[in-house]
Amino acid sequence: MNVLITGATSGIGKATAELLAGNGFGLILCGRRKERLQQLQKELSQTTQVHTISFDVRDKKAVFDAIASLPDAFKQVDILINNAGNAHGLDTIDEGRMEDWDAMLDINVKGLLYMSKAILPQMVDRKAGHIINIGSTAGKEVYPKGNVYCASKHAVDAINQGMRIDLNSYGIRVGAVNPGLVETEFSDVRFKGDTARAEQVYQGFQPLKPQDIADIIHFVITRPYHVNIADLVVMPTAQASSTIVKKEL
Ligand code: NDP
Ligand code: 8X3
Image (cartoon, rainbow, N blue to C red; front, side):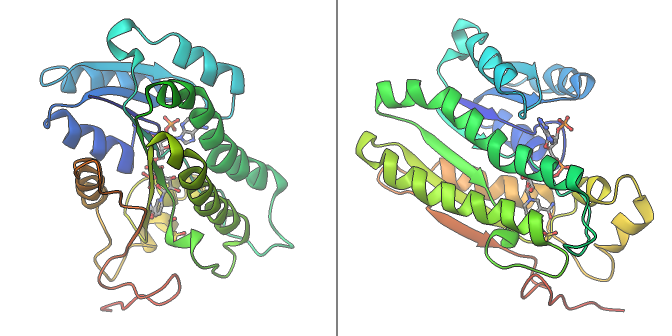
């Protein structure tokens, strides 16, 4: 069974690739950073079949070319994990940068749509397949300065529901995993390499680890066919909502 993971070079995507490699899944790993993909391929090829493709999910043509270029052994994508995404900036709406807004909507929303559009025809033909959309608690509630990132994840929530409705007649499973605070490169990207500020986000409590989300994804994709985990929210125990986190300081 082949699983395609977008955003496999880091964080949740990478941890998922590592876990699934040891559980008999063939892997198609995507991301922009080629060296990281090569390194992962080297490591995980010892346990499973791995194919890597480097492209930007914002680039519609690159997405379709990448899927068309899959070698025979990887052409069939049984499970698509739409994980690539990030936040860019944390600003009030009046101070937000339009480049950041474009990046979040283009990657988190349109990139997810392009990937799905490129892979859906084969799932529809086979009347089989499973799509996991990585949303967020930010797709369930809006927090101060989260505006456009939250909007992008609310869009993922709506697309997840829409996909499930529209693909129901084909027997394709669709579900979302919506994490709260997970310590990955997410905040490094959000704060544009300001590592000290990024680290602060996870200080004083125990955040989720990317492996925690990988475990959940593994659980979701190994349920019997009649079970579809449609929409799952997971937070660190210390977190009660986007703005309420119990810190031990
Ligand atoms: P990371 O920054 O660690 O990983 C993001 C991944 O997305 C990287 O592999 C990156 O690869 C890839 N990516 C980003 N932009 C693009 C692009 N334009 N084209 C292709 N790939 C891209 O963050 P996380 O692991 O935390 O994030 C994964 C998902 O989880 C995201 O959708 C995020 O919104 C979501 N999430 C994260 C939470 C958190 O607290 N960390 C909580 C809730 C949801 P590369 O740079 O090599 O292209
Ligand atoms: C990531 C979680 O709360 O930083 O989606 O937006 S949060």
